[in-house]
Image (cartoon, rainbow, N blue to C red; front, side, top):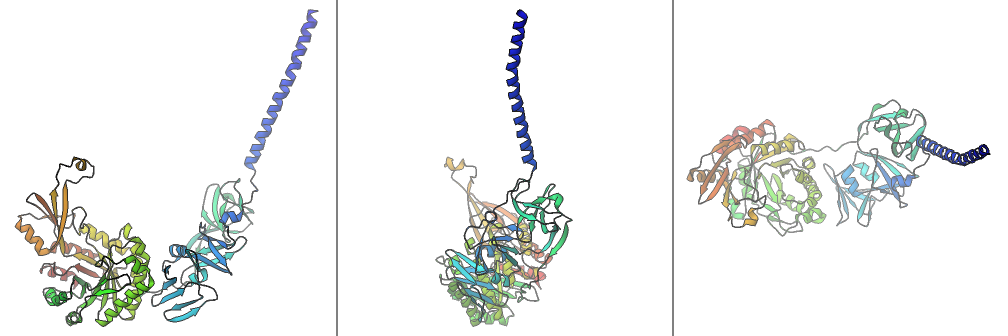
Length: 588
């Protein structure tokens, strides 16, 4: 009896275990199936196809994508009547910065070496100089705040080619020429949006289809196709990579210049009133070797581009009698009411300024114009360059030398674009002074390192035959007056300076008299390439970095060693008479 009861209990236990085992087995099977599905999913390539309108960012019906030098641009252009229209900013920044758009007067310009191309918005006609031309399409379209240029017209003046593809709309633009890496697909495969088999397909590649290799990777290679699709394919499917030349025949413009055969030895003559012109004989009396003088005769006088004029024909005649050319200076600093950016950015005022300057040059028989536009804001940059271009054309047509004064190159003056200036202007003058200035900390106005760097960095943009080095005849005497220490809040700050700084610009003779009167010792500074002196007077410390024959000679050696076009000095009347014996050794 007991045995039977035990057997029944064992049977009952087995019956209970079977369902549990079944459940466990089912769970194991489900897990295995899930794992298998995941493994399959992981290793089987996705067949998802990328929406190509989304790929290119197309939305409006007339939108057209741009693929620029094998890169899909995030900027769209427009497609209308079989013509591609690219927005001006893209054209200017990516393809050809010589195009200039005046949004206030709806005019487009392109400056050739010998002529100005002018296009009115909404027209299919344009002028080259005074000669009329036309196209079978609208050249410039304005849509709200955006100006679009016809791509065919852009290509007339730009080393650029394009091909149009539809469905979806895209244009393939090539503007960079040279060697590229080319290959073909080893077999039919997929080009995917990103590296990885799960990334959407952007194109089915045929065996032998040509691709441009952009980035080589161990597993995936980035490539572009001839019809403007950029993506990734497996590296093992990339055929033999070869370097091929991508070239395009295009005739680049050739610029010519009016230059002297001898070294330029120029000096600025500051003239602030008509009476100042009568001093020319005495100003030149003790100089030696000057072949160019630049009187400060013209300055912007209103927002319409009119100029104040202090010119004198008798002055010019006297200089010519002494074999000295006159390159009159035009400035933008004298009339504080003038908005230089406005004048240069608006075509009517800019061209009025050009015409007034050239008319004055003809009237007074000037040999040249020296442009000294300083303290420009970044917004004036494009208008300023267009001013130089347009002025250069009229100067060249009248055999007038055009020189342009520039700061030493820095990041914040890059918009002056010395390289582009040099295409049109005859000479680029690098003002290698004002290293330290009114409002700065004390220091040299023109240390040798500052001069050397200024010249060398200018030469990165401008041919040596066009570079003139500007040097100072003046010195700044710095006065450091101790502050009242009672202001404990100010004196506790980290950048606290315990003295007030003022400076005075004086000539070479005045500098020497001050040093001698105060019994100061001049000590040569190899780092600055000049003598340094320091003295105290009534509790004020005076510091002087001396400009004299020794410092000027150091600078002239920079001119000589770099074989640049010449030298210019600011300003006549500040020099010691003996300085000319040093200068003429380097300029004759």
